[in-house]
Image (cartoon, rainbow, N blue to C red; front, side):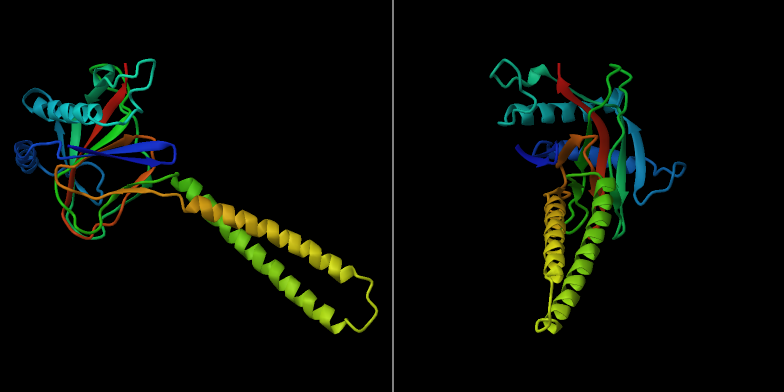
Length: 267
């Protein structure tokens, strides 16, 4: 079992590989194909098959909880083991997979889902709100289709792009004004000059430096790393609901995964 951790902005995503047996994945695939594709709910780029993992399907949740608990307990990750004790005790963590789940299936190229965050769901069994989104990939995608955790929400990105465009336009205007003034100064270099043009140039230069510093700051913010997770059969991915993320356009298809809500918190 291998745990990979991705820190993105203020959030942390977790990827577990080799955590589910081939028998488990085979049963999951057989279950998926036995379920009808939903025709009633809002149409999306992905076909959906809904299920409730209770009763005879409780094994789905039992297997996922066991895999997550083992993966966290065997790692050096401390985000869920903070406190007075230095011992890593996964029994001190509440790990519960909510029963209502759905398979999502992208069967054609260019299937995607734009940047968004996920809603919290209240667990009817415990009355506790879910904390994490849980995905179990059921297919391999050699190219495309990554579920990518983002360092900021879509609104922040859009606002920064608008500000960056305005700043670049302002910088261009100031450079043009400086170029015109330099030309004027060259023409007047042999005539009497009270130094006003030089003062104006100095002020424009200061303004340009301020704008360029703001542009550099915004470009640095835009370059914050994201955390793309490639679909791989049997791979588990979980991350906080409030973490912005997107489904990048599919290239290799199908992209199939099980989607559920997870409660992951200290007792």
